[in-house]
Image (cartoon, rainbow, N blue to C red; front, side):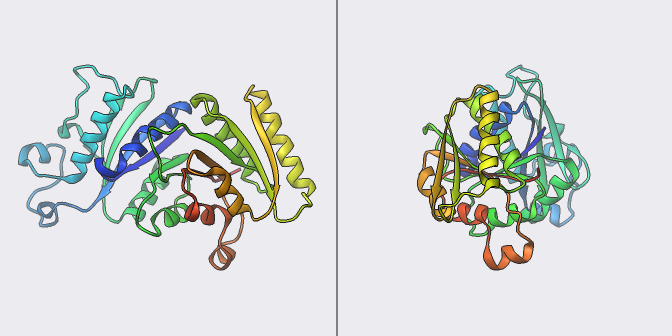
Length: 294
C-alpha cells in the first residue's frame, strides 16, 4: 500500500504527522509526505531554475523545504526514520520530476519514505499527486478552511483520513459504521488493521432510521463481526434506531476514530441531499476515515 500524508506547517501538522505515520506503519505501507505551496517570488520571476542544486546554491528560502525539513526531523525523533549519520535532510538531494521534487529515505519498517514538494493550488496538486502515484489513503489535517476537507473527500480518488481535532495525548478507540453500502466491507478491513496494530477497542455500529433493520443491514453486521472474530479482535456490536449522523457523532465524542464507507449516492444526490460521510465530517469532533472502493 502507498499512503499520502499532507502537511502544511509544524504549527498545524504535528499531530497529523505523528498519528498518520503510525497508521501507515500499521498497514506496513510506503509513506509519502507532501507539501503543496506557492513558488517563492524568485522562482516566479524566473531568476533561477529550481534544479537539484538551486536551493543550496542560491540559498533561497522556500517554505516547503522548511516544512519538509521539520517533518524529516520529527519522524527521526520519534523513530519512524533511521537516525544514521548518512540519513540527513539536504535540499540538494531533492530530485526534480514531473511537477514535483522528491527525496527518498529509508524507514525502520523497511518501506521507503518520500518527501515531496509540489507548487500550486492545494486541491489540484494533491489530486494530481494521487492520480500519478496510485495512493490507497490520503491523510490530511482537519483544515480550518471551511470546505477544504469536504472538497478533498469529493475530488481525491483515494480513501481519505481526516485528522480532525486529533490529540496526541488522547487514547483513541474505533467506531466502524456498518450498513449495506458497497464500501462497508473495505471499511471493516481497514478499521480492523488499525485497531489490531494500535491496540484500540472496536465498536461495530449499525444505525437504522426506523426499528426495522433490513436483512442487508443484518447480513453486513454479521459479516463484519465474523471478520473481527477471525482476527481475534474483541469488539462490541450496537444496533441503534435513529438519525445515523447524529448517532455516529454522539457515540464517537472526542475519543474515537470513526471509520465508514464512502457514500454511494450519485453526485447529483450528494449535492442536494448531502451524504452521511460528509455530514459526519462536518459535525464530528474526532478523526474520521472515509473508505472508498469495495
